[in-house]
Image 1: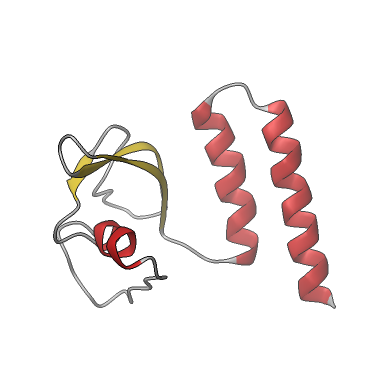
Image 2: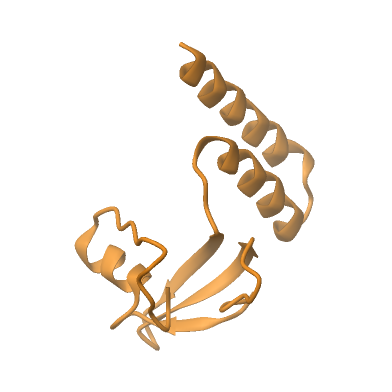
Length: 104
């Protein structure tokens, strides 16, 4: 029951953020902070697929990593990237810390 309460409270905070934040960066920061209460992460971002270049563009990125690999407006190819794999396979992809990749 405690986990369900945390999930509900987090969803409520995200809803409040959607109604109170006026720009994408501050909105994404509030949402990412709330999500981290439920699911730990090292990097979170919002990407959109651009079919004309077969790549993804990051519109918001937040990281807890000492050396960020990606930033706002970064472009990564669909082919060979984790986000491309998820896009193609429509499945969850979790990568452990020990795996190294240029794009995740």
